[in-house]
Image 1 (cartoon, one colour):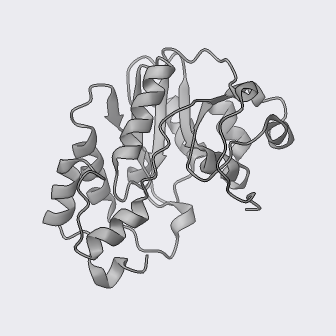
Image 2 (cartoon, helix red, strand yellow):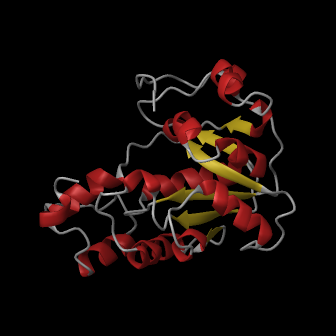
Length: 231
């Protein structure tokens, strides 16, 4: 996608756009294969800092960037997310992408959430939570301009990736710069692919995922060595 060379850098103070998102609902999308502590920590941090009503976890049904690659069944990923967020009253799960046929595009999801809200009181709109890495890839998404029209975006740090500069925002999303917020947060190095590989090798994933998720993975033998060690 023409992404710049990853580098570690603190978030420039000038990029911390002041936008009042209080009362909105956060959205955290992903494959969640498996959901891990970084997902939970980031969601909770953004919820707290931006005074969101809560965060909606949306497991992808058929992620377009993972076509041709192994992915756990949607029902397993939904079950893991449900178990991971069960003890947090500020978290919800939405099956909108899992239940919708075809590839999972966020532009379509946001339109559906506007038409059929999965939670009460969405008058303050939605805030899509993206890592710095994902934000850099946003221009390559389907209808990225529509995404920004339908929600605001909160960008959180990702180890090894520099937050995009204001000039980058102006180049790719002219006139929509104020729709993007940059939130300092926990820079956790969790990787779902690394967790899958550890599980496939029979190694410990304790403290990388919630205990209920670990129990689900082991009980369902979700990441067999023959399928996952090279993915």
